[in-house]
Image 1: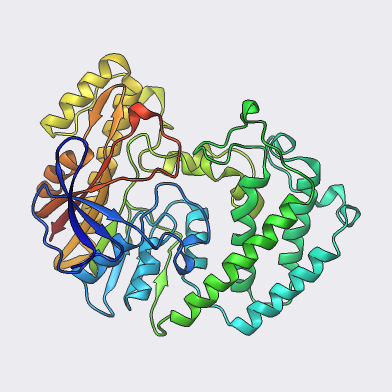
Image 2 (image 1 turned 60 degrees about the vertical axis):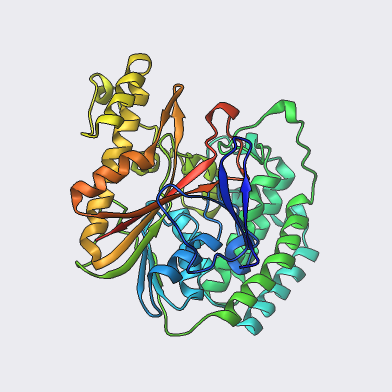
Length: 430
């Protein structure tokens, strides 16, 4: 295997480095550590939209091929931006992606929907012609969307340009999937043309950055996005295997999976961390423009596993999950920060519900593969993978194996002291 080498890291630990595609029969033993170098972050539709902390495609591709067969049904209960679903399709598997976030489901659906090239190119030309004819006077004040702090987030010229682009997309004489694709292209530039920091998981304006957004930036960035993304969806459509399904139900979440028992052949996911990325806040501007939010995001935030939106009444007393090692860490956190101690407990309790649900819908002998990161909470190392394994065993899963995947690149700004350099891959068997 030419793409596999053994290296020693800065701590003298032996790590197996794999460049590009991971061999299906790659040997793994409990506690092994791997450094997977991705070459496919933007392959086909994977790069249509930035999304924090997402899978690199080679990992689900490998796990899908290792633990399932063609035409099987694959479940990702924390679908995020749909990486698992794209790879399932390309590997000739059906899939279901569950996520509480409507923005996540929207992006994911666009990424797995093939488009007819001739119709796509015709619609693209109509958009290009409309952009050439743009004048600010074509947009009335009443056309502008209403959402909180709109005029802080966007300069007036950019507001007019984004509104014009959105109106043109909605008015193209084409079908809904093509319009949705162009809406994702529009969404992909919104953070860049806003006054918010481009590289922070929270949507914030940092005056010291002196971010400069000029008139026509939205128009120009949208044109560049089309130049890059149209060929990607065309290439995906050419590789799309017909007769398969990729579904994103709107009435489920990871703790409430409404499929019949023994339905899925493999479940594969990367759940949020404790103190998770605040996805609604990360994507709030995009959600406002696409119509998935109008005002407060609190209700949606509270639905997320790993959320920090918790009520004070919940953390007056210390809670225990029933895993001694986890409860010891939660007790230590509670001494300095009862709120974060409850957040940690609730994360594990939510993951227990998820493990129960996945166990029910998996076929006997099938696997649930969880790629989970650790983090620090008030200075205490919270090793999610170690705590999830005994919870899974209590439910009835067998721990088949577990191994580490080194994290080599952070696409999001995480304080140095909170960075954890290894994700852990747990393979559970029903």
